[in-house]
Amino acid sequence: MNRKILVAAVQFNIAVGDIAVNRNKVFTALRSIADRGVQLAVLPEMWSSGYDYRHLAELATETPAILDDLRQQTANLGLVVVGSLPELTDGKLYNTAYVVDTGEIIGSYRKLHLFSTMREDKYLHAGDKSLVVKTSVGNIGVAICYDLRFPELFRKLALEGAEILCIPAEWPKPRGEHWQTLLRARAIENQFFVVAANCCRIQGKLDFCGLSRIISPLGNILAAAEEEDIELIAECDFAEMVKYREQINILNDRRADIYGTP
Image (cartoon, rainbow, N blue to C red; front, side, top):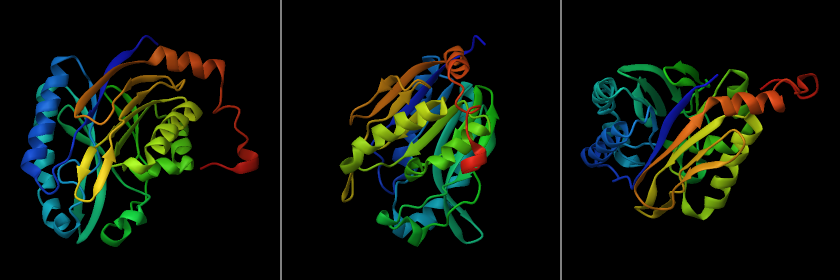
């Protein structure tokens, strides 16, 4: 396998409740990274609005139009884009990550683990399925923010063939060290690439740490952000992943007879 792709994590300070501002930031960033040859972009969690809980149901009604615009944008730019948006279905709100591949929505993932500390469970419903989807750039697994603390999910994604793990997030500053450590751990233990896009700086009463990362299956930091608005770009070399998996065959050496299958 001699496959290499350029990937990006788009990190920015989300304007809470202001879809127009956030949409402009994202679409400008997508055009910029496409001009630099990027094929896969990951956006932060709830990138269109942030956690504007009081107005989230109303804001979610704009999501179908945002997705239509994103479909057109990715078709024009030849991009795969992953990011989470508020979804309103049958009167229920979800935090849903969409995988849009050059004009088509080919997968969606509703966040499984709701962060009670930020009252997510009071306003949102949890999903009930994981997601690995075949895209034009490879097999993508998706998780959202707090999911990162539940390693069973990521092993399931690896067993289902994920090559690139995409993580939209709104991870607060007090636990930035946890964020960085867990991202590397998920990459190393499952031998896949991790592309993690966090938001940054202050939103309301919360301060988000940024620290978006692109990490190799060996745990090497391919690109790292601090707290600024940035389009983080790195190359993913699939031959490196295949070679490492052949050298240390973690998935084959598992003892599912002892601890089961996620």
